[in-house]
Length: 459
Image (tube, rainbow, N blue to C red):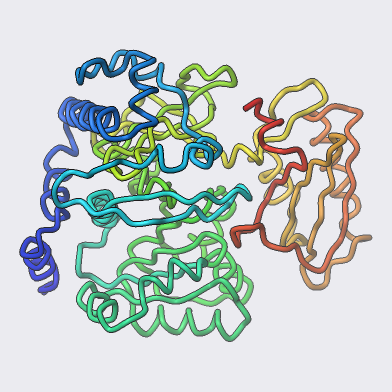
């Protein structure tokens, strides 16, 4: 019997938390697209009115573009609001912070992880965080784990991991929630074995994992033919989940791999269900748009993702260029839930390469080409780097027993396929290295552009 769930919800209600009410509301409306859309519009109007009334920067911006006039919100003009970027946050500073917050809200500082190499500081409030918790609890329920059932978090950010585990209060809370933690920011063999032992001994209902960490554990399992305990699902966060990564993890743990999309600034934005036909957008708490290179909204094709957080009143993130690419679709998910779908996530904007004709080339093309199509058991790790002159350098870490000479014929095929999209004159250099250093945020960067993001994207 799962006695923890009613106890946790009762304690949250007594404490005044909005988590139980928000969780109940999400469950109530999950199969009604109309109710979801109405709730989103109501909450967006409240956010815009608050931003106009309490945030100096948005008082000017929303007035100028006609979204809020004399306290009246015109949602038809929403797409006229200028985009928020990290540079705007740095320049505007305190002018983006609300002068006062609604009763019961408290602000606290936070900072992005800097996966673009450009970390930024900002403010959030407790209502935003409670909504994020409710959304995550809902996501876990959808993929097979109820509140109070065992959860093992295997994470790669020391900051995220330790903030959730230090102190007696966190210890009591984690015992009550029935969750444990393992770090994967450093993975010698003894650490991998410890993680596998914890999974086998504790038998968690769900693994909530940092992409690169569990990918390394899965490779270890697959290479040695191990058969660890199989949870209901493995939920991945922290970075884009590419198909070859999901396949390796599913093979290792014999469980569905679920991609969860979010960020430190935005919280839980979207997540797959067990159908895995797209990412359900948490539109009770976010507005997600995709835009083309001209800044206009697009759908049914890849674009830059722009997100509005409906619950951070401390420093409103309105039409925030989060730095990712994806595709919105009007298609419905076979699961029957009414949340709109991000049909695909194709990686970071800074990973998009540009060929000699000035055309953008999706990073997934290279990742699949090198990591799957031509990886005949010899590539352990790789990266595609576009240099300032447009040429490509591809460092490769070989599997033990493989040599540069043995893989040379495969690399000729890679050159041929790369030049199909990058141009016949594209210089391609392979480098065999012992290791590839992690990026600024501790993640493995599959694709890197030497050009600045601002120049590359015309921002």
